[in-house]
Length: 523
Ligand code: GLA
Image (cartoon, rainbow, N blue to C red):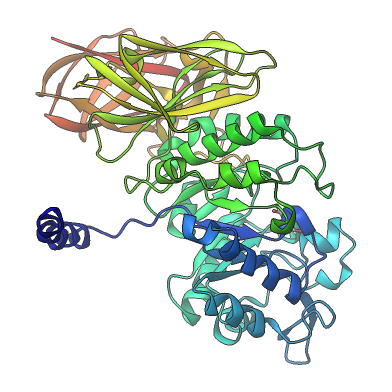
């Protein structure tokens, strides 16, 4: 009876899903770099591929194998790249075919400039002139036409030395890839948020320097990603780098490794922040407890959630601890994923106030990290979060409340990059709300901050308060209509539509030194 009913629903669900653009969730797989650096070979890659299946990781969703730096041989007389003669004696296609035969995707690697990172940092001199610069078309044809890879990560060591301009060079590479096979997945590895242009070119972009095998590194990556939720959207993700879970026995990467609490925190934060999940350890030596963390289906579901949202910091303390939250299942619905994050060196009793995450009424709390129900609570939920810990929960409220505050660190900055091409930036400031503000907006029509998710249940008149440096003039656009203010102290009366609204603040000619947040009061 049940089965019969379900079968009636399935075509309806399938039709509803195919009517929308198919969600493209963050990549899940394994990558060779963290455990092996350039010391890779065909047999090693094939063995790790087998282990994805044998350990149940493929069934959990890890279905891509990325061959990072180290496979390059030499360019032949036509300029075509040949694989490393000792590490890959049977060629790259042989390995790619093997990965494909298991039903997985295969990823390759290059540099946007002349030389690879391995040639500069790992004495892999064979990587000199192995990068894509001035070989864009032939390398795209080799990797995707001849070798049949599905994905490419493109690094920047050589390009930095060559003094290339990121947007120009990555665009050139994107075009070369598209000439071979449109839509090949590309990761920009520029070690910092490269700029909003990246969304047109890549499926993910690294936001940090290389991950190290210690807690300090995890903490700094979470900090860098905390203000970047507005740049994450379906098919385009902030890449927090390859996971270090399971590397405990491994000494190649700097650091003493993570303990169980830290590994669980890393996985929780990578999942709730919708980072690609690339396992970086030697699967032959993975500890059982690390494997269990990586296979947690409830956290994986948070990472792969079809809304493709990245959690934003709802609350942030000066010691770095805080509450990160995102909608799952349905936008503005009653279910949200929440992380209580404690990067400090001492355990903390942390309070989740449901008002801070826009939920009202009775709230059901499930601990997804440890897979247990915590009960039903009113107003708040308190948990002891260990030092270097993060616990991710699913919370189900009975009412969704209208938010009244939008922090600057949740906003989208059209001209933001973290590589110093533009001045506008998110700045840590203990005296600002959420310990963060945005500096140096304005002075150009493009240099604005925008919130596209300003929610009003019924629509109507609101008073808009802007916490900014008061002396500067502001131009505010509410769903496109312009309001001018002489200073942030002017309390503007605005109209919101029912549902989601867009508020944009900038100034075409004057600089806005700093914005902390905006707040709305219904009239
Ligand atoms: C850079 C990247 C790493 C890795 C190495 C390879 O450091 O950031 O992820 O790909 O190069 O040399």
